[in-house]
Image 1 (cartoon, rainbow, N blue to C red):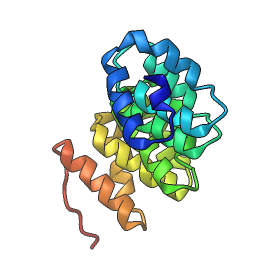
Image 2: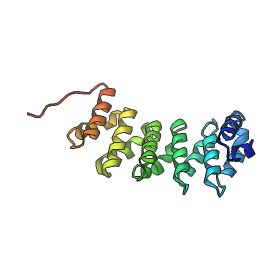
Image 3: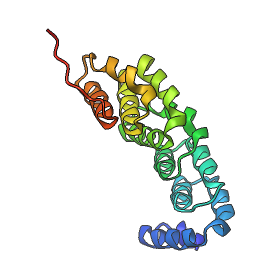
Image 4: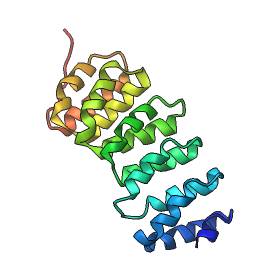
Length: 185
């Protein structure tokens, strides 16, 4: 199945990934070894397959893959962490919010939202002091998490000069049941 996974045929690789994932924990070690392969495509398929396996080792392996030199492997790992959140991934995911590639940054924000409460304090720090795009993604993640610790920061973000930041702040407050419309006199 591993040979099929890295054969270079996406249809065969996809079928092999599904079959390997059904083997669960028994496939993890072989896939872990494949995450060190020199070819990025092989690493990507290993991470993609690991993301489908429910095993205690997988979130750590996905977190380690966030440091891969190939951006597509990092994206795949972030997407996997959305399915299998890992609080230990928060620092690496926060760093990805500044990625020049919007897809990578968006996937990192989604993975942070999936982490939930353990990511809130770090996301609040980014919302307060980060670059504009990072702040926007932090506001989105906080809105999706819906943790009451974000309420003051989201209220403050309503007064920002960014329509998108204001949107996510309002969305977050609405999701928590305290959304209101304010008009400046």
